[in-house]
Structure formats: structure tokens, C-alpha cells
Image (tube, rainbow, N blue to C red; front, top):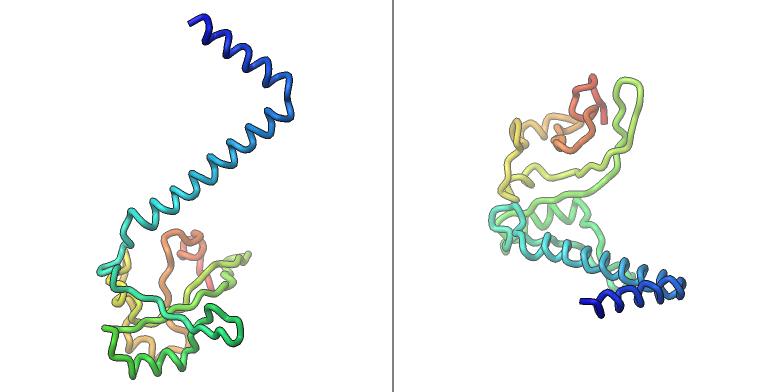
Length: 168
């Protein structure tokens, strides 16, 4: 036991004597531990836990790829989506979504929020239902210039209507 304590004291003396090497070693350990934690967190989230959708192994994301223009992933135009919806027979159903930033204005301030424009059948395609209320009804979408919306539980309180009427 005495030799272990002597070795520990000697190691601490050397670390104190060579401060630059100590700092570099500590930083290398910190970066290595952080990178390892990040990699295992991603692997655990995506590989070990299934997606929270019915038949998640049957869900496919389709994108437009144009290698001649050096475009790896390009969103699909609405006209292309509607053509595919009419003609494609290889899939049970097709749904579309597009990400965008919107300005949310409420009582006396506004803020940017992330939003998705989605097709009316996205919830049905993913096999999920809203926690409150109902999913979209096709007839309701046809008669409005501005369609109905779904607000996430993670959205700011003003987006959920508790601080007066909010407008997107």
C-alpha cells in the first residue's frame, strides 16, 4: 500500500512540474470523453429505440437528387408530389412536408418559430393522432385560404393561445 501512495505522489509531482503536458492531456481526455458520449447518445437514440410510428420500417423519405447540378438533396415541388400521388402504385400512401420559419405575433411582441407545412394525410401516413383535438379533415382544407394548424406542446405559450390571440 505504501508503494501505491508513493507512486501517486510521484505522479502528482510530475503533473505539477510539467504543466503544459498536464493541460494538453486533460484536454485530450475531455474531448475524447465528450466525443464518445455524443456518438453513443446518437447511436442509442437512433439505433436502439424504434421510431414512434406504426410500421416505422415501412416509412420512406423521398427527395429530388440532381447530380449534374451538384445537388444531393432537393425538396420535391408540389406539382411533382401531386403527380406522384396520382401515379405511384408502389406505396400505400404519400404525404408531404416542408420546413419553414414563421413570425408569430401576439399581444405586443413577435418571435420566429419553426414550422412545417404538411399534407392533410401526414398524420394518417405516420399512424399517429394529435394528443388533443383531431387531425385534418380534407373538406375543411378545401374551403379556406389559410389552412388550419397543429401546435406542438413544445411551442411557446403564446403560440398555444394562452397569452391572447396569436397570429402566424
